[in-house]
Image 1 (cartoon, rainbow, N blue to C red):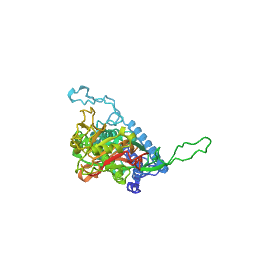
Image 2: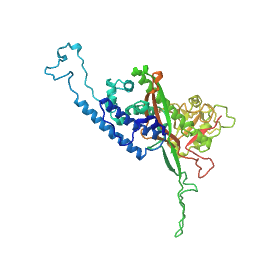
Image 3: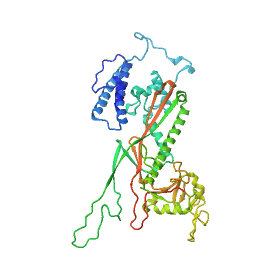
Image 4: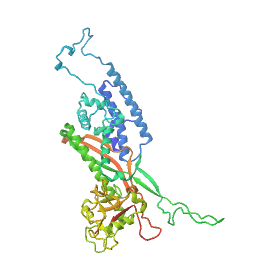
Amino acid sequence: MKHVRALLGATALPPGVIFMAATSIEDLRTKILDLEASSQAIVDEANEEERDISDEEIETIEANKAEAVKFAKQIAAREAAKPLTAGPGRVTKAEPTNRDEPAVSRKLVPATVRDSARHGFANLGEMAMAVRAAKGGNYEHESVKKLLNAATTYGNESVGGDGGYLVPPEFSREIWQKVQAEENLMTRCTQLQTGGNSIVLPKDETTPWGTSGLQVYWDGEASTLTQKKAVFETTQFRLVKLTALAPVTNEMLEDSVSFESWIRAKVPSLMAQAINTGIVSGSGVGAPYGILKAAVAGTIVSVAKETSQPASTVWFANINKMWSRMYAQWRRNAVWLINQDLEPSLHGMAFQATGASSMLPGTSAVPAYLPMNGLSGSPYATLMGRPVVPIQACSSVGTQGDIILVDLNQYMILTKAGGVRTDTSIHLYFDQDVTAFRWVFRINGQPMWGSTISPQNGSNTMSWAVVLDAR
């Protein structure tokens, strides 16, 4: 959107701009902030329009940076010229010190080692308090000096009219690591990254036993070789946004420990749940294309219920047929995703070892389901030797999607290089004395394959994911 620069007015500066001579250090700092705000506005506009930064815009950013460096040198020179002692005229007598004062009245400041990744902040709460102090004009506060002295590549400057500060990279990484540490499906998927906003993927969906695509033939001696060219398809994969906007009262910011523990627990859990739900049942419009969406489109296998099967039940016959429809080469990485309410039915599931036709739960002596840390001896329960993972994203018991057999290596997750972007601003809720913390994660997901697999011999199709129809 082009309105960003219009809102900034005089702050959006053309390349090579020349300022009038500044009269004070504060004037110089203001001009630096204006230049940095101009550059950030260009980046924000490119992000909002989901495009690359143009060559002209890059030149503007570089010119702004060069001017800012000049002003920074002017500030450093003026700071260096300041006298080390206060008071008018030449000092001919040693200034009094606190050497003779009682020890209890001395102000002792312990030496500290600066953490380059955190910019000297102990935690996210301390940085939030520094942002609040800076926007209130308290530039002498020690925490504000950390903001002013931090390297510009860590995005800690004012963002134009918004007046927020970017959180240093370490805090963003810590939050993202917690998202991945959750039991979420993204860690099981094939993950791709892009520096732009989309990626084009070539695919080969032919089978070795099919009639399309590259083929091999038994040709006779001296005969003309049979020709068959390869067949490829392409898929364009575009990023969408997963966001969180967390308004936090300034009273909460004053209590660093409470704020930090709350925000670090809440946002990652919301992101993990949204990712799981998108993979399982996403619509594909402004969200990932989910497994159940593929089932409706007929690009994965959906197994019908048994004749006279009661509602909201799962029989061993269902499990056996789902297993047979998973392509054999993908079984080794497959997992069962279930609604947790299915576990009582699975605990009673068994089959007839003698070959009897009965498949009803509880009528045979051989268990089909092995509980975790029991007979299976693994962190998950197992079914057909594969882990059973209960997740809240699965559908209600009795509906399609309450149990899914899937190899998530065949599901692609595309993310923006750089991971989660984190911003703060006090101006959105200024009249309520509230600071807004925002997380933006550009991500998308979709299956690799757009069709089921037809076997060489037989009529039952196979796929990378198999669901059970509603009962």
